[in-house]
Length: 293
Image (cartoon, rainbow, N blue to C red; front, side, top):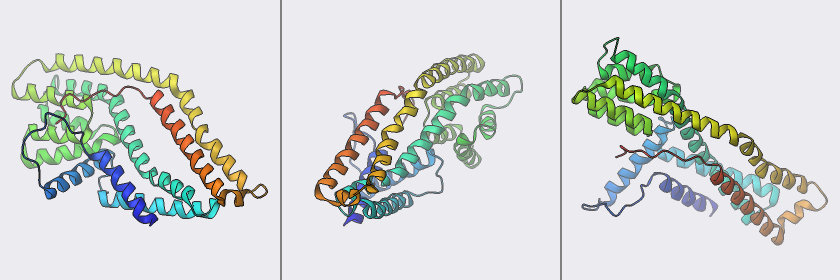
């Protein structure tokens, strides 16, 4: 029963991550169930690739979520006894792989924010004084970029080698990076490559704008560093008290009682609510993508 429950939770969580929000402007015939399933699988694979998990399929990721949830449920049963409390603990532990996926994606986005100003300046040098063609300059800069961005540039390089179509190449790069600065840079290069224009001036203005944005974000993150560290105590202190309580008197038996199970679930709910509330308060605004498909 618990395995079915965790499988359902993993499926719902994955669908919420990869399914696009419906808009009123959507038009056209509805896709067949097979096409919808294939599109959802492609979006899930792309979401994993954006976090650097190129070799992990959605099925493998879902299996990992399920395995972690079942193992955590078994371990919690040994401590607090079988019941709703153990199921809730297992469900939260099953969310750990999803949290790690989000952390890797955030790290890749932060690496992009920090390195794009330098990459844009390198593009200016390669396309200006050194006279490189725009596609070659973009792929050459990406191959020397930060580790978090290299898989995306490697995929773009493969597309360029197969098609020599710069528009399709930058589309692959934008899809893999999913970054506003990457979108703006790629669209600027594409327009100049196809139509012409003053590329150096455009890249200079873009690099200056990205430097100002990066400075402002680092300043805000520095001011929030202490609060983020303090937020860890919202989780560590209750866990420590719960473990200590099992070793005091009849603490283990109290956890296994009906009242104890209800209080365990209530305590977990309060901890999760405080954690989510704190995250929302300290969340920095995310720049929207303009050229997203």
